[in-house]
Length: 403
Image (spheres, rainbow, N blue to C red):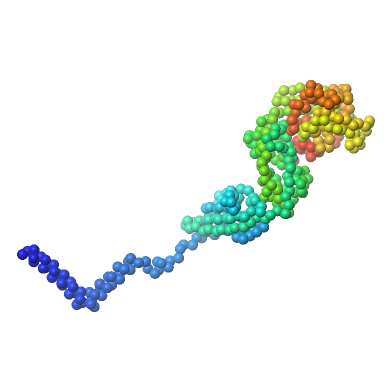
């Protein structure tokens, strides 16, 4: 019986609940309705919440040139940010190759490591964040210009060749250079021992490079040409390439025109050779010169020498090595016996040799042991004029402060 009464009580309570709900529509029913609505409202976002705008970054990213630009100069790309700091910058060509660059320490600008390639389409995407970390983004796509002409930059070094400690790298351009500073920045030297190299302009088409002092033997050098994005002259651009070479052993030869002797110092070891140099009528240049080419047998004619006096000549001269563009050589001599006694040449330095050149002669041995870039210094000549540093590879005659 207890269990039955318990069930009935539950049933009565349930009946009372149903009755109460049915007979009190104004109060209990209204409260229930409100409770139901309140429950629904707590599960669904409010209209104010759904219409709230996303946070706007205070950072503004700027990219020049704008999207769709054409004929863009390779150095015209600029990426910057205000109201925040750049976080990422990606610049790539149509193949996906990225352009390296650096974001400034203050985050307000990005600079490419080098100029862009000409005649190339690029895409730029950059992002910046404000102080609250909210990100802004900007994009651009453009095409660089196609040059109207190319300027060839030819130099006097060969890939992986070995040169003497006096080697001067001389670059000659096929067109007059207007933007000399940009060109100078576009040619850099990398050395394995930190040797610094500086350039010097001789006119509008020639740029020579050398260190402050003779190269250290064994120095590994790479010349980096990055002129493909450099406007050498209006509408005219260069090209990119790398040229490695090595500095060999040290050889510095000093010609004393007064004593008619040449002292050769190779890696600290010294030897003397009898020579004859330019006569008083045709004295040899004083100054520091460099062997710029080894030419073997060269035909030398008096008719090509301005202001030549004395008997005319037409000779096949053996073991000829050029020292100046104007025609100064150090070469073999088989027609004179003045070595160590007198100066009888027409401006060149002569060492004893035989017709056609002999391997065991003074000049034969010196020729075989010499390389392009070796230093030849002439002193005590009667020539009063000063050697022009642009005459051959004679830039060592120019003080470093003026280089």
